[in-house]
Length: 140
Image 1 (cartoon, rainbow, N blue to C red):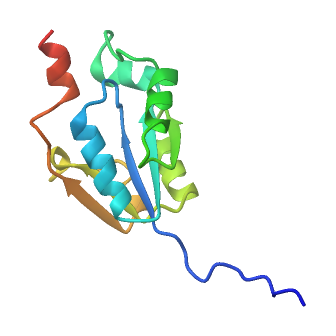
Image 2 (image 1 turned 60 degrees about the horizontal axis):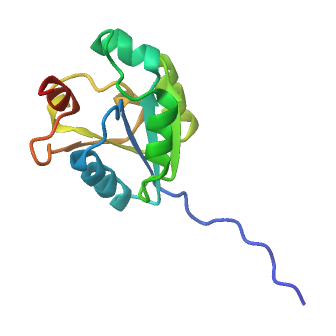
């Protein structure tokens, strides 16, 4: 006798984090670890090179998109990495993956969080170790 097939009785909670992740540091790792602890699936969105250059200037990114994606995929807390080149693409991806919670850095408190309107919850994560990719680059 074979057992009947069962469908999932629950909807996995999907957590979303996005950013440039140009030069990864322990603050990023701690945020990804925390984000993963909030749900079953962690999806990380990262900006295209063109979007970073447009937002941060002609000397950025330091690491190209392929390297940033490869690095993010190697982190054990990350289940999927996707890329986006515009606010509209970011919103579409968050809706497509049905993310219910977004984790962003606390520096976005009081500001519009792109994609925030697509999720039920936004959690502001405190900066760790005082690290910032922009500050690390500017110290060179």
